[in-house]
Structures are given as structure tokens and as C-alpha cells.
Length: 159
Image (cartoon, rainbow, N blue to C red):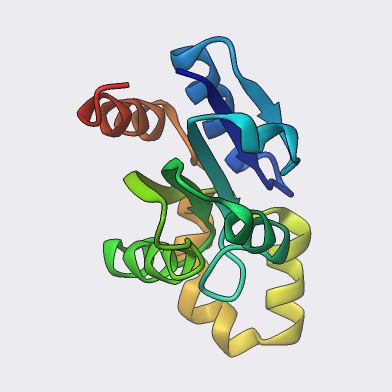
């Protein structure tokens, strides 16, 4: 079986998860969305949450897929709830053509960069006050427990 790990990561959070998957599956395509990755049977697709979904480069890649097994994974910054994780995953799933099979999913919190935290604080002080505890907690993610949980989800699908 041929594997690919495709991801989009701005701050390194999703890349950290992608590297853990690479350590688990071994030989595979690893990197940005590309036509080379389309040759794989199983494609792990990682992303950061952008507008409650995946970013445009990942959306475009997903829409090209046909007859693949897909495992979606990613990170979110400050809305650290299972409900939000599900919302982001469901929105990303909506781009997957019906000929593909989603074999698994995983989301966890990721570190929100200092520069992004400052943008929130300066641009929307009231929003910052509401989410500052989540921002503080984000500094500890993804951590070893997040990585272990990701690997457990991959193990559940027999990979």
C-alpha cells in the first residue's frame, strides 16, 4: 500500500502531527499538496483551521482526489472543544468527492503564535478577554498526549 502525507502548516503545529504520522507509516510522499501525492492509496491530509474549515490549498487538493482512502487531521488555535473540532472536520469533509473513503479523523489544539495573539489583542480586545485562557493553554499544544491520541486514531483504522 502506498501512503502520502500532505499538509499545510503555518506555525508548525500541523507539521508536528504530520511528522508523527510519517514516523508511524514509514516510506511515503511527505509535504505540500502535489500531483505526486495523488499516486498514493492512502492519503493523510493535515491542515490548520481556517474559517472553520481547511485552507484553500488543502480544499483544492481534496477536490482532486478520486478512489482514495483519506485520513483528515489538523490543529486549531483557541477554540479547544470537541464540538469545534467536529465542525472544522465536517466542513473539510464536505470537499471530499464521494468516490473517496474517509477512514479516520483527528483534531487537536495547536499553539497560537505570539504575533497572532497580539493581533487579536489589538484588533479585538473584547474577544481577546473571552479567549485569553484558551490562548494560554494553546502554548502547550500539540503535546505528547496529542501525538499519542493521533497514533491511537490511526491504529483504530488498522494502519
